[in-house]
Image 1 (tube, rainbow over the protein chains, first blue to last red):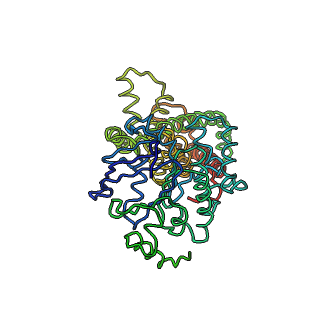
Image 2: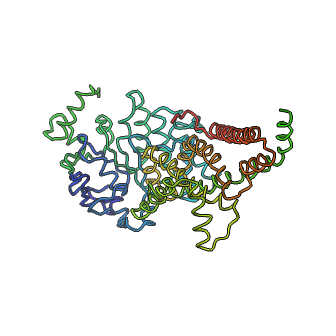
Image 3: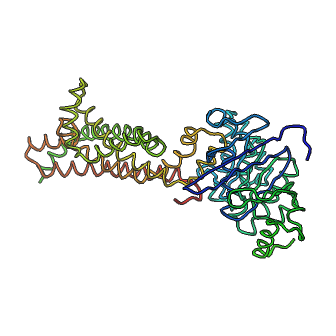
Length: 255
Length: 222
């Protein structure tokens, strides 16, 4: 890959020890504009910790993060908050604000963080909810939504902030199988619309069809990295391929 | 019997004024406790070690010492010591307010801790500072879940307010006692006093139940 511009996100040498255990051992990678990189690997590999270290929800012990060539000074609160606004985060268990309806979930950060006035924030929230196909659910509260709908609201909430990149931490892992499709289709639309994303997932079929690059993590390091067709092709002798075929057996995924 | 009834009826306007004073003490104390208690709860959950230690000490002190002792201690001792010249009414309100703040802080602390952790993470991920997240995300939910515990605390403070009598505050108990010892109709007057407390408890608890229903989150059961 030859790119003239600096990568939109660069992560270097991220290390994290939690509870005496080395969760991340010097992880580095970069992300160019419009790319979708997929993190795969067994549970406990450190995928989730890595994503949370990128926006400092878990402060890394060591390491640096650059957004558009500028290093994030996570100790300076103002810089940190400004950085986080530009990085959308999707969680496995949605983390919607339970006391706010879908519309307010999407608009609250616009109003309180971006200081956008209520009517404009509302219009923007409505537009984002429509984009994820929930225009008719805007007055429902999280407890009244299905898992797939909750996750789509959380995607709308992140998108409303106009993020430069999105971090998606196993967005479909907490969903019933029949609800996974609606969330994946939203993510697919985003990828095709040019959104820059890092996605941790076990959805191998989705990865194969959409990922620009696969990062395979195990025991806190990226052990393999490459295009999905290289790493995941049936005759590749890679650790990734091995892992994915076992996943496929488990879920009997049809491709 | 008729005599007793007449005595009560004659005393009723006087006693109702006492009920007004009691309500004033309770509303003042609960309000003071609400504001201080919320700050203490937030400090105890999110504060550093020193903040947590001080709040812990405060809570132990006010939970560990009887209200009656606190009333004397502050009214005749500490307030005088720092040159604070308060009326009996203001002193009772303040002491009860400081006491209920200790209890209320634990109600709010429990409610904050019962919230799913992820919402704070999500708020931070959107670029909110912790203060903004606490004000906009954590407290609106924690306060909702605190209403049943708060309603219980209200009924306790209402009855503790009878102790303000010992400082000479002119509330229900003081006035009932005053009339009773003048007219010797002890039983009917103390029954009336008890009844007034009962009515105030009932009104407050009912209002809080209504509030609870009003702010309930649709579809959500905690």
